[in-house]
Image 1 (cartoon, rainbow, N blue to C red):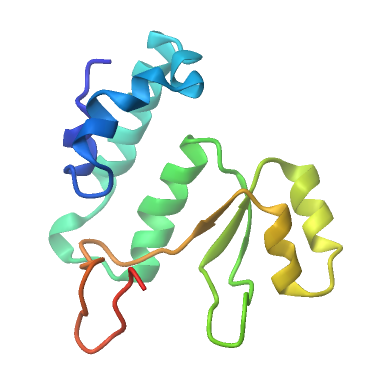
Image 2 (image 1 turned 30 degrees about the vertical axis):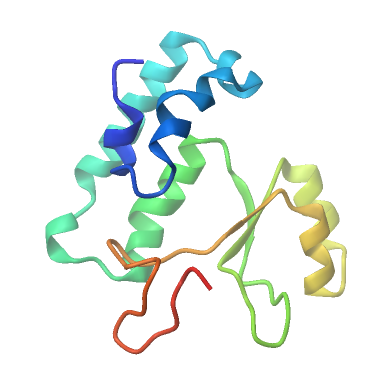
Length: 143
């Protein structure tokens, strides 16, 4: 791949060893064609190029203009937002493998039970929010 993965995320989200070595051994990675990776990298660069990082975008703007477009480019097109998992915990989104899984989740009355049908949670934060420490009195996002 022409673009360094560690440059793409600044090395803060994943361990460098994973991005530079381990990921290449995963079957999902091996199944990708070089041209497909180059196309994806170009699409992601376009999303990042239009995102106003200098204006310190807030969480909603970061979600709408960066995170959701990136997730869509990565194939995460089916999701449900703000499903309460417990009285004190409501992740920003539950991501599904496909439309059928989302439709099945939508038929479940209890929002917390929908989590068993999803593949991933998305907890979204504003651009450059510190993820491992408190920010202006808010809880630490990592918790």
